[in-house]
Length: 183
Image 1 (cartoon, rainbow, N blue to C red):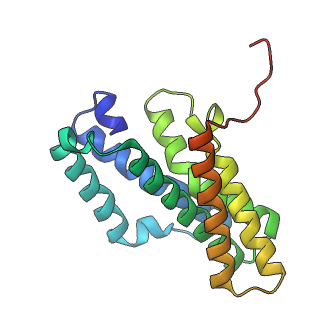
Image 2: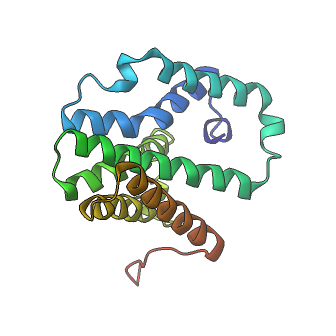
């Protein structure tokens, strides 16, 4: 929808969809040494991104009528899933826990950041919302739960739930991180 709102043609919509869906995980994979990234090795990743782009391009008049809160809830669920999955993958690659938390955060917000940059906008995660903070917190909860000997599944569920709830609270309550005054 951001690509359509930005006036991009079908090719632009496809490129932006691919970048938004896969950039965070690709960046994480390259940083942890999982090369080539899973998004390049497995054609299904691109197929899903391009399929979603085509669907939205063809049906965007109907898609814009979907309630905003539903879209935000689905986005928060995706953020949660990507944050914990990214953290888990980094831990599997023996990445130190603090850096694994950062890798989970990059996995969660990297695609949206790349999307905004391609649209010549300051990334939303750098100026508004508590999106990256929610991903960081969820990833940290997951790592903490793992340190406390929780099963990987329970740790992921706890981290994902914390991320989701924090993101939805931030949207509902209009929370933003503090900004320097005078600017």
